[in-house]
Amino acid sequence: MSGTDEELALVAIIAEEEEFEARRRWRRQCRAHLHATLAFDQSWLDMFRFSRQQIKRMARLFNITPHENYDISP
Image 1: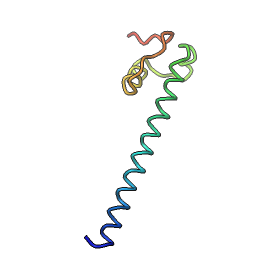
Image 2 (image 1 turned 135 degrees about the vertical axis):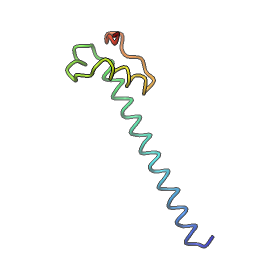
Image 3 (image 1 turned 90 degrees about the horizontal axis):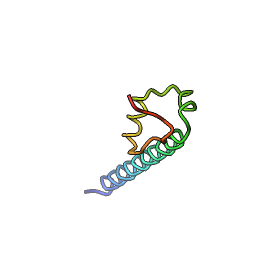
Image 4 (image 1 turned 180 degrees about the vertical axis):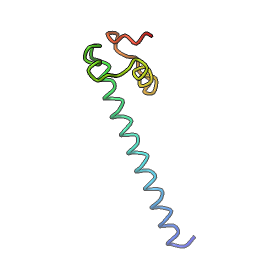
């Protein structure tokens, strides 16, 4: 490998790591927002018009349990 090839490979690795970190930050922010959202009561959540299926899907995606005040039964 020449110096230029090595530099390009290094730049590609750094870009990939930065993208990975950005995605991880985004997932962490989404998870934090979802935790905060699910901590409120059902009437507050209904203002956002989340369907029960959406809440179930988000809870499953982020591997969390909805707050006991939010009934997600069918």
